[in-house]
Each structure stands twice: as structure tokens, then as C-alpha cells.
Image (cartoon, rainbow, N blue to C red; front, top):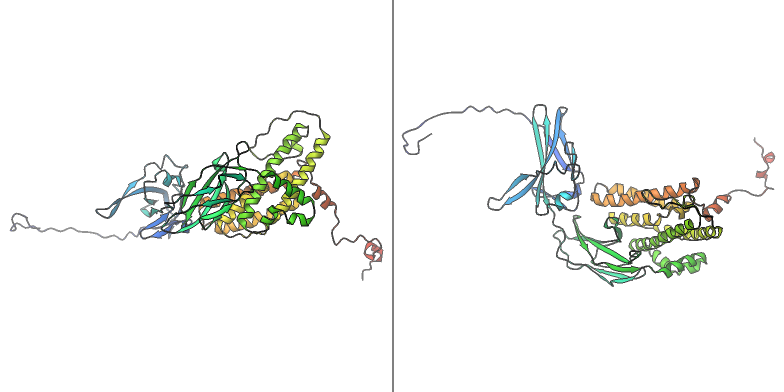
Length: 475
């Protein structure tokens, strides 16, 4: 070393350095759903509207793991130095098992609340620390928030109509660097958590038929999701509209079904169902099912008011509130009228459900739409025939298989929405099948007649040699 002021003053020294090859354990980190974490230079792109599910693996022999801890950091860009400053997110303990799950396990999940409640943060780091007996190994993934579609608007025309009205949806000017994938429309009446999928479209201009609005006000709330090619969503809340039920078309459908087959083929609802378009079929079945569910509830209320025990004609869904039954003398004519309406509406459900089995299963939107309409169609379990239950069960099974094959490729929220409807469909079918067996619901006329029919290959000819066992010789 040389003195800065006097170069003649010098000193010499040395330092011994021992290099030890510790070979720390390698920790691999990745996304459970790889398509939800697409690489973008040093970052992985993540959608703010979906959760992040990560896994970690200690490569090699790691039998001495003492503890695993996940940490999250917020990233702040320093443009002058072209670096990123990582700041520890200090609320992990506060939101454990609320936003964050599995903090001390190999798998870690952060819900979309982390991103939605901290929308100003665009960079995130997820770090896992493995504490072994003699060392500590770490690994991390850096994420950048994927920008959702922006700069557009949506409108609906007209602002009021009936369940037969064709509403036009227009969503112009939406832009996304990754490209727009599709537009999906949901509706709800009073509770926004009970949104129903009505349609999806790859284009920004499309037409829909909507179910009726609130029973008292006819108000129907609409929300549209605009999704980019990386499944990042923008939610667009529309102005509420008024949709009245078109009861005449429902009455015509019931009457036509009781007439000849030629008349039913000319029914406008049947012609729409015959189109095979899953958007149209889903909309019609959802709309008609809601009307029939309402009519069924009214029939049950009327039956109860005429002395018919509800426990003998219907099974309430789990969590529903039933009014206390009052002892009233049984009105025989009311029971006859109830059974007439019951079988009439059951025939329509049996007819409608056949159209669902012809629909192709293509995308996650397809699964969500079909499972939602099936859950609505099977809701009135006292009106499901055995044939209807079998068809619904088979279709729900096909949808479940398709969903299972996509489960690791689509957002968790899509899987959750579809599985909720499929579970509801399966529950409805099981309840419908067990109802008559447990004498909790009425045996439908068609089921009764079919149960008494002889098999097609059953020989009723008493003169046939097969009817006389003595004529059958065994060599």
C-alpha cells in the first residue's frame, strides 16, 4: 500500500483466504399452474385477478429439513441505477390463512387479495427459505404484474325487455399488449356473489337473451369480463336493466309439449334449442329453468297452505329456511292440482335436458356455462324424472372429466366456479333419485308407468315353447 500524500511511505501486507466448497442444497421453485406464470425476462408475469400457487423442492438428499419459511417482498424500481429495491412485506403474519396459505410448507398460496389491495405495486418477489441442520438454502421467483385490458367501454341495448328480447352487447376500444381473448357476461339479482354466466364471445359485439330480473323490481345487474390472451381480466360493471318474464312463451311450451310432436317442433324456444349453439342453449335453459323454479316454489307454497305436508312432496336444500308448518286439513283437490302441475313441469324439464347432452365441451368458459345452466335446470329436485337425472348425471360427469383435464392449465377461479356448479348439479341429481325411495317426494307419472312396463325382449306369449319349462330339453 502507498501513502496518498507521501509516495515514499509504503507498506506491505497479506490476507489468508480459505475457500470452502459447501455445496448448499439446491431449492427449486415453480408455479403449480405453469401457464399462469409466463416468463418475461427476469420476471414471471402474474395476473392480479388470480391467486399465485407455488411449490418448492429440495433437490437431492434433504432428510434434515428443520423448517421452511416463505417471505414476500415488494419491488421498487430505481430508474437512475437501473436496479430493483426489494422491501419485505411485513403483513404476512396478519393475513396468514386469510391471504396466505402454507407459509411453512413446501407449497405456498397467495390469494389475489394481495395484488388487488396493493395495486400500486407492480413487482413482487416470493422467497422460500429451507433451514437444514447445518445450513440454510434459499430460492426465489420474481413476478411482474400483467397489465389487464384497458381503455374500453361496454353498453347494452335496449335497457328493458323480456326474456324473449334479444339484447345487443357492445364493448369497443378495449386494448391489451397481449391481445384480447374473449368477453364473458354474468348477471345477478340481489347478491353479487351469486353471479350466473350467460354468454361468452371472442368478438366485442354480440347478442344475448337474458333471464328475468328481481321478482319485485325486475332489475337485473350485469357485469362483463374482458380477458386477454394471458387470462388477465378487467371487470366492467354495466348499468342495471329491467327484464320481465315472457310467461306466454312458457305456457306455449308446456301446451305444445302436451300436443303432437309436429307442434312442439315449431315452438320458438325449441327452435332456438335445436340450434346447437351452446350460448343460445345455455341462455334459454337458464331463463326457462328460473321460471320453472319460481313456479315450483309457488306450487309448494300453495300445497302447504292446503294441508299438504311439505316433507312428503319436496326436499329443501341445505341451509334453506323453511316456515313452520301449520296443521291444516288436507285439500284433496289441491293435491290433485299440485300433481298435475308437477308432472307437466317435469315433462318440460325432461325434454329440455336432452338438448344439453348434444353440446360440445371446448373451453373453460364452455364448462362454466353448461354446468351453470345444468345446476339451474336440476334445482327443483321433485320435478326430475329418473331419465332426466341420468342424463344430467352423465353430462355433469363429462364436464367434470373435461374440467379435470384443464385444472392445471386454467386459473383457479375458473376451476372453482365450474366445480361449484358441478357439485350442485350432482347434489340435485342424488337428491332427486333418493326422494321417491325415501318417500320424501312424489313418484312422477312417467316414472311410475315406465317401472310397470315389461322389457322389450320379454316374451308374453303363453303358447310359446319357451313359456313351458317341460318342453325345454337339456342334452
